[in-house]
Length: 251
Image (cartoon, rainbow, N blue to C red; front, side):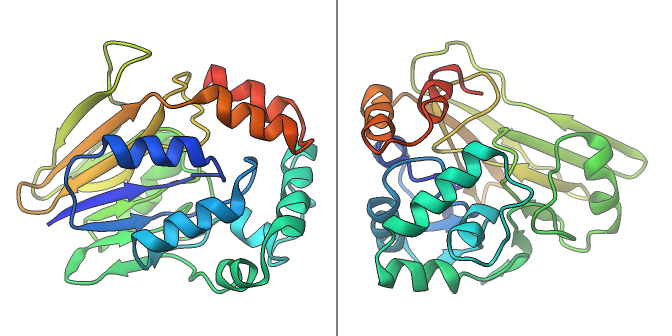
């Protein structure tokens, strides 16, 4: 089984379409949350995402756009985008977002895999450093957890008394590329496929991953997309301009 892992699309239709066009063949799609927020194509991205399958966990921006999360902890740009998104959503899309399940979500037929947005213990927690990852890695009973939220492609692992983090290393900043990670037995992993719509690791290209369950390999991918079109949509929607300009920097 080849599972396409998408996370943090953030209403960036151009980035999502580029990922789907550049993805190798896959059997199943799993979405790790934040379908909306920041970007200017919430309804279009929801339509496209729903057409891909039914495996979703909710993200904090999905909750904020449907009133399930207060905006007190959001920065002004994120809060403005959440309010704008709420106003733009069709009733059907609002109800669908509102009903998305909280992680961790087991992956049917693969009991060794679970899906979360933030952390297995807190759906809104950021797992950025090995310090953040250590407790989940030590206490996890599920060997492999896919998570999002940080917009940082890579992850963490623990094997016995050893634990560390990793990031894919790419050769370019403008071409489609892939880096593979061979998973090892007796090792627990927290793996982030990266953000489709708003990377924050200094690489502007859209990020996603493909998990080959038979070979036990995670293929990390980066792909260029029509950045200007995504930015123009944000400007035309009168969203904060920083939401558009930051896309070019991958921050």
